[in-house]
Image 1 (cartoon, protein in one colour):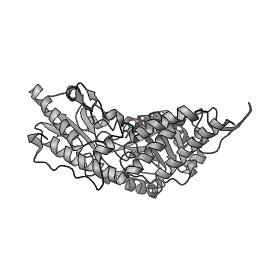
Image 2 (cartoon, protein in one colour):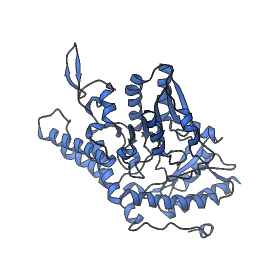
Image 3 (cartoon, helix red, strand yellow):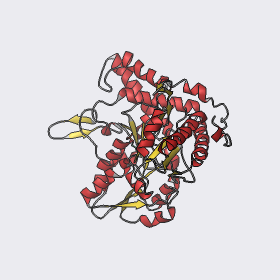
Image 4 (spheres, protein in one colour):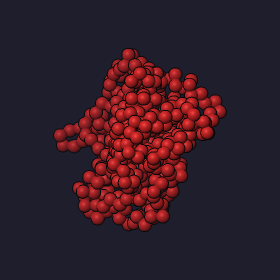
Length: 420
Ligand code: PMP
């Protein structure tokens, strides 16, 4: 530890948390970049994968690879069992009532586009309104904008205060008889804000307005119970939750999914096809046209096993310790401004440094082996709101350590000296 950091409170391990042992599970962490040990702090973009997930993918392709649902042979049965077993695993993780409510998609982005295309095009008409927040990822802005343009509907935006908290006093005023959907994130990727999602849902439901929750940044860090939240739709991506890329989940209440038309047409989403008429398949297959990402679903289920094995409460507690420590270290750097200091925050440290452009800072950090993201984080309206073109974002994962947070802050100080 450097002399500059000695005065700070070093994180205390939650009972039984052994970061060094956990790091051994992640092969990608054990490498050097630019001759320095890798410090991977880009977890909000995507997480590294534990060996068990890599092994699950290899095992599937080595032994069981076949197409699902249609085959009469052993490998197809195995693949189908594993794929449907993964669906059940995800149902259990989210505490959904039924696997009929779990739709596999490519990622959170596709899940939102599915709801936009299927629910949105059916329910939203001219003059209707959709409510989002000022801290959404582009994935939860652009699809709704496209729908509004197509239908002559209006997008209304719940504002954010200077800390990055949603201004909840404004929320009830945004809802009205024309509101067809509220679509809001549970955790902001750019600021780390944990939104009061339960309250957001409750207030909307009093007016019978359905709510979509973007859980892309929540699922890797906390337990999620869709029945407790009572959300109508919940979306997340596997790759941020220590699972593979190319697999994500849409949870939808069965009562909505039943009423929604298919998103795409093709194989597997049908029961019967003739040139006169097609009868669609039951849920959730109605929404899964074509050969799915079978290995991805299996890998995601394995990742959730891994997360549950560690315990999401312990994961959240550890990341919170790192966040508090990192906040203290960075706030002590002269000329550094943290963007996003919400009262309840996940492990995101977004910041700007006087006199150094975020991209230059990101490049210098990379030279020190510290992998962060520099840019607008697919949240340009957030950057506008805080009056910055870009930030550097360090985002924490369960395998990060106090030493890595120190490496970040000392690399930032070095960058500052270079540009002084
Ligand atoms: N929502 C949030 C809050 C995100 O952070 C992200 C990814 N950065 C997305 C949606 C989109 O995720 P994906 O690209 O995996 O669809």
